Length: 319
Image (tube, rainbow, N blue to C red; front, side, top):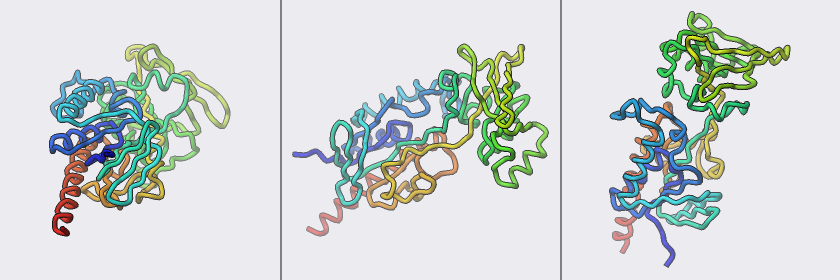
């Protein structure tokens, strides 16, 4: 007989694993499907300090390793596959992966979102070693150091001002000739003594052995390049990239209600399709952090359980 899970969770990051944990504890027949490395963005974080009850030495991989142990201890299965097509209407949801086809009574979407990268040499190898995409996560690591913020939109400018709480100097590198953020935010940063803005400027290369030590920037109007080195006494500086995120929701296009590629849910993680929920960074929300992803996953799982129970009750009443 073909297997139909109670719930299938797409994505093995903090939101997906949290959903899997709660599903397992509630004795649902649950499956987590992750296409790549389990853990999502947090696995590239060397030090995590903003998860309640974690100690300073906690790393992203360590948190995920413990979470996976918890999930599997409650009976939830985790498999590796890449879901390429979804059929979400109806009481039985069908997920078509590269490896096989899966069916479930409910689905929790937790694919996450990836930061848009600069795509320059040195960026990948120095991510988590001076290159960051989250000021809230990593800002305090750069206390009394110089920080460069890449971008000119709302997020970049707001995060630049936030980083002045920690950094001795914050410089915004804006590729345009003017900021693209809201006028009110631009007025605020232009009056901020702790922030300098360099226009028409892009990073060409990030350099360093094990840590950011220097970078090459370029004026995109004149073509002039300049080498920026860390102060000798500091040895490093921070590069925070805020040029947008890419929600991993392409396969749900024209199926689920979205805003700028992010899935719209209510406060209980319900999407516009009955029995389909979304959790974590892939949904519309104001704060994308590990703790909010974990909370989303827990809520989505509880709601999925309630949805399944309601269907069972309705079936009994009908009979």
